[in-house]
Length: 191
Image (cartoon, rainbow, N blue to C red; front, side):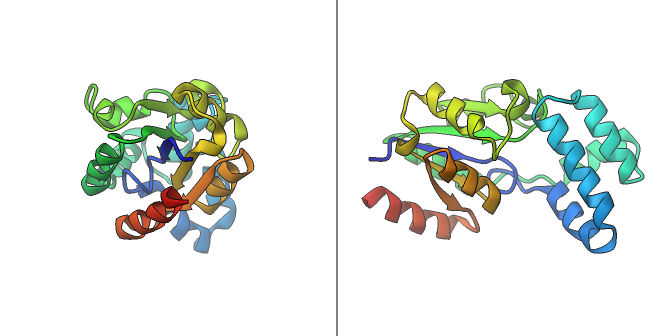
């Protein structure tokens, strides 16, 4: 029986400007794209200071830190309909956001206590020292919700993060659109 639903941030709750940039860069300069992914991962799991991670990514992109931050933030749009859906689900299920993000990154994107309207628990990877698809990231989130891993559904736009959730003992849905999510989640919840 499902008791909790976990949502990813970038690509689900917020559009992901960096993923779009990295996808385009992958075509022109795969090694640079890989370096950027590595730097983001180091910042997201707390192994690299957040400012140093962002500065290094900015450097790889040929931007100043301020230009990089502005570009990322201007490319991020909240999925208001999905957030409202999460609020509706919260009436019957525990909800969480599990995001691979630098320490303080969510607070910079969401006004004080905004996420508390939608999620019982908010977990930022850098704050726990583990990032998706590491099993510990999913397990810590489930533990904070007070549920077993098999009672959780992870919603993410990345297949490797969905596979990480499944490997940790959770159910997972690859997010493509809100309509698709609602349909797929209804199926999972009815089993």
